[in-house]
Length: 480
Image (tube, rainbow, N blue to C red; front, side, top):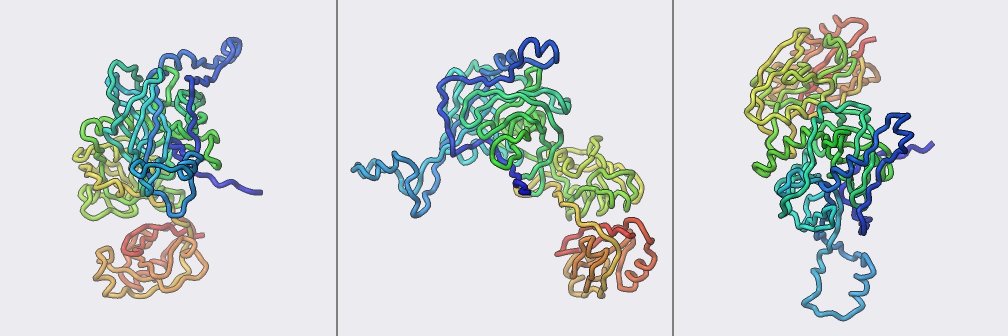
């Protein structure tokens, strides 16, 4: 049996196929009147007619370097090489134009248009085509890579614009409609349902600032930046990515929620850039082992692996091994939700964390900081470590030089010397790791370690905190 690899595609820029559509194509999910009457299924025709004029096709051009020794890319280029020409009219031999296609929609009558960052990123020329075939050159007002949202503008007025809906009220199973330019086929419509909410997909950095809406709408290359409508004709998302083994639609697509996009757009319109909140913790999901080890009723929340020095979290009193269960009253079910909600808060705003610490619920006020740059995360998300059990390892006294070098080892610890196949190895511990606490008890020496190991229960889950490569993390040993 062969299993096809899955890839996430940003679906905005297609360099392999640009179809010059000669007419407006509206591929509508149509149903006979009898089917509507019998099944109660929606007819999207009115929705499309009401909003088609607000949808735009976006084509881009970018000059890219020509690789040494590359062959001509098309017949015209070959003919130019065979024909004499005026040297002064020759194009730059070091670059060649590369085209892209995407979608967008008009948010205001004065020419502001929303699309995806990856549709217009690095473009030298952006052309916007309306449904009536008028073409305009567009300028980038602001573009944000982390959210994949961009705001562009054309010099026009009196344009038809969309209405926005509340993406928080979207329900799994409700009907949605997308209009865009798949493979350059301008103004095509496709319908489906919302498959899931709060989806976290592989992102452009150590944290994910988008909690996607997943749909089964047929989204393909060229649809990126186009709107996702609810049945009321309101935009509740921006189509951005697909999950596919071929690059084409497999029925799994992702849209940026409109509420989050509008937050970004407001900042891009005001300043041309986006400010995001920073908490300053490294987090991971709470699995069943962590939940049991820290006396949590079920796996939920964001486990604080490490509080970063001089961070807002440290100032608020957040500690390693805390479990953040809510942010500003919003329940955190998965760790990926925390950076999303923190990122929506403007720096300098006071928020409140609900944390579980040693079986007690605490409310901690925190003043959200500012994310330094797009390549850094306000709350990095680590994958859950392998699970295992105690202990099958030998330890050594901590080297004083190492202890003096690392602040995380100021209270001492023991260094793992050797492991054999057993619980510690299965938990993900490795030779060279420094164990600083076991089963919630501080370890300062080998004798501490030996005493604590002897007192471990026969079964259950036990947390072990280690320092590896200068950074602390907590793993869970499964005793059985």
